Image 1 (spheres, rainbow, N blue to C red):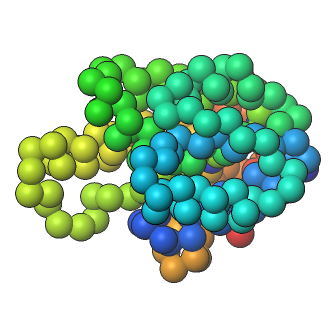
Image 2: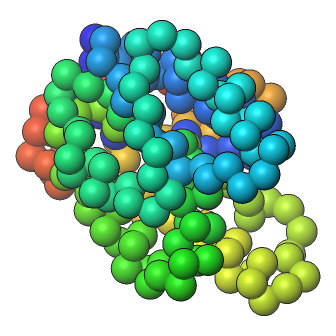
Length: 192
């Protein structure tokens, strides 16, 4: 098992990024915590959440939080436990709809990721590769999402882009490696 690695898994909708992140977490630790940011506001979303729960299977504990991801990391990150946060896109939307200071929240998340004391995997959508959104809110969301992805990519040890179920490493460490922001020895976690 590999520990003390922070990972960002990016991809488009239905790209296979969550499935890939699950596999990474299952290889990282025997104890696993799934931090779910989705809120089931309608029947279709309930079905999606149920599908994700079924795909996780046994061996996972779930913590549901729509906005308190930093607090969850601080409370639950541990060398023996893999944490999977799925997904940052919904977390960001929840923050925006709550009227939160999104820039400050992204900064806090990057700090929490850099300080994490165990394997931590984030799933996030890469939404900046499509059309320019028609509305101001859509453009703001796209910009904040791009900012969040960049900030997390800076502090994560491994960054993977998933397209058509295929992982492409964008950033990886070379084992052994001392993460300067955490002053800890980490070993490289393969993306495939």
